[in-house]
Length: 285
Image 1: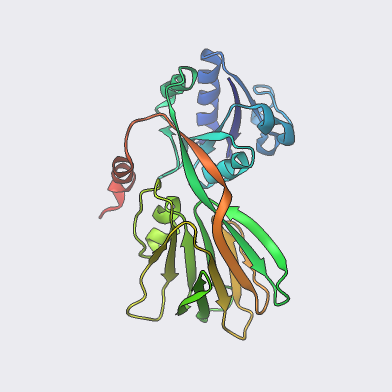
Image 2 (image 1 turned 30 degrees about the vertical axis):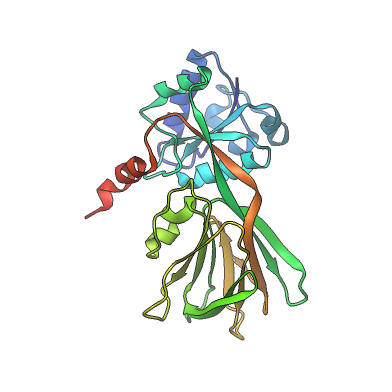
């Protein structure tokens, strides 16, 4: 087995967890390496580094070390080559992590082929200008957020599903998420928690100026269209919490199920409700 390690060494505990992971992989006689994009001077004499473009092609699995953001980044990178990812939590909640940093002994299950691989639906989102040309496109695992830019005023967004008008929202923005992303920003905005194995597209308005605007759940074949109805160009899009990108004046966003999916390695037998309870138990007060 060949393992590509993708640690986020900017996290407080990631370096120590990475060293412990390396020691465990050595003990299991697993070949491992790190892509230069994750290089750190502290690891130069300890780990073999391989070119990013090649390493993903001949690894069997990817191990991401960090929080949810780090794991999502690695999962999207691996999804393009249909490689499964195991997340090791070196952060706080880390819903996406397969094991915690005190459970590294479970890495033996990889060698014993004692694990499952869960497919997680992803979304693609394309930004069009007023000439109906694509100016930006990307995929996301958690969510696409269309929100107001630098100005503090609310924005007016018109939403269609399969070319049929759903609603016009006067709000701070809209979150379009997968079921996997239902426990992220959408949850903070009052959206429902969904089992990540259920393929769906979830719409949650952000601080909408209405008493009756609630989240909507669409089937995975739906095509969601969002248009900024304001004359002011005060709208931006963000994929999985990454840096926001301005949407051009009279621009339109088309969101639908991606043709690729993320594959997550599941070693432990706990179900979604057990994970949910264990992750949020400290935040119920």
